[in-house]
Length: 288
Image 1 (cartoon, rainbow, N blue to C red):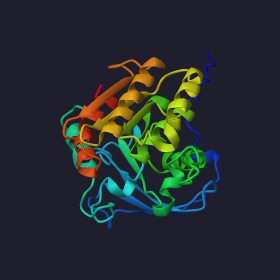
Image 2 (image 1 turned 60 degrees about the vertical axis):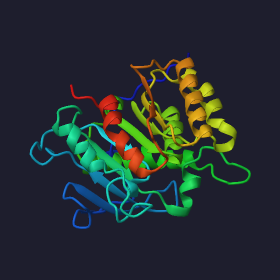
Image 3 (image 1 turned 30 degrees about the vertical axis):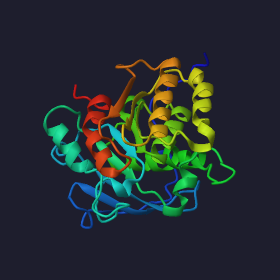
């Protein structure tokens, strides 16, 4: 097995040329004062800028010396704010869901970074290979934007813990696909993955082949939440079950490094993913 060395931390913004220097947080245009909106984050790896919304846990301002684990989420405009969601007023309710499990003592307080997609460019940025009919295939560059630009910038703006075990990545649908791909490709950065309703079907299910190729090179398996709704269609359900089997065959251990959930009455939409936020957080970020 080709073991990868574990970096002590992610690249820090102090050692990096920040293309978004001076990008101020705006909490006046968010649904809650603990949500901070940064408009127009731009980097060198992709041409399009994107907004970033940051959730801060309830005790963030009361414990100024404390650093927190962090979860980076795709499709950030669908997580917190009904005005920006793909279907208006249908969100993951992620602030409310996260607040509840933190205040109940079930989940470690954490910071959540919602990365807005770029609309028409979403498909390109969230797919790891180019499909001859649909295009795509820019996930590698999107991953460099995250790991080399956005993550160091967040570390410079907020009190996040930057070790691998404190850093998660998540998303649904194509966002779940790119989360899985980047979680495998950059496993030395991400110790936790939230893969909801992933689009395994992309480009003839090529992500399964990538998993088989990449897994032997990963020195430690990222802890992974994988789910699918039982009302998302037979193909989506079958693909997720196949993925779960491949993960187990490649060293993920059910109940330890892998949780596979067939969500009862689960559908492929924001309200259904909202119902999965709490159990996902309990598995990936349990209170100590």
